[in-house]
Image (tube, rainbow, N blue to C red; front, top):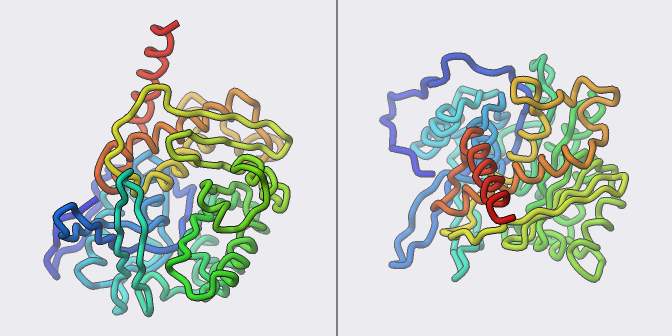
Length: 355
């Protein structure tokens, strides 16, 4: 998503008349992707996995707070504007003097991106475990915390590992997206070890087939690797994305559901698809009476207790529809909740008509 450049004197203004309770807090990178166009030009897009996830949650109507600081530079102001437009609150609304991070994204023939990162001394890394923990403690309605990707580099372990441990101990649902970016680190083994340590805190893990290979998880295929990884953690759920082959959602009790798009879709690129998928998962798990679903957090065992197969399948379909919307558009373009529900309704109608 590309946002118009603001003047130095402009400041984000909220477009939401009433903000929902802040139920999710996200922590991790916010940066600008420079995406190579066919003619060699670089197209700037606001991004970063955690930033994309945060915007996607806000656009689906989930009350969300972003915990990391943003830069006061031109790019930082655009990142702040993007979050504000999505209805996301900032835990650190005062900009910092450090610059915004950059990532150079190159797309292959299938629209899949590979990245080179420029993140030394950048704004989103000007944070501490104590600051993250304090920000969460100040949110009375907080139910879920989420992080992943570049927040899991070994150099930042002292920031995110204590925070994740504190959030799990506080009874909040912890979500970790492995989303490995080996090109961002010099010591791949230390990175893998830190990712695995973060996954130990998670109630919900998201991985792709590529992530499982990068983590060197044993198994004959991606699904076997996913089962193995879940067994090595305390996670209640593990979501495995497989690109055009769809996705699996595994529950700790052995229940597993799979979904994929039944009709072909036109993929423009895959930038942000996994982030929109994860936002869809969290949104569907949090959906309560106002959206026609049981409020899982009010059950015995709370939000992280196992769910029935029908709800597990509905959660996965909502996530898949969220990702499919994204890949049909350039860059990370998350859908609103109503767009996801409309897509699912059309899919149900098409399935019924085909019987």
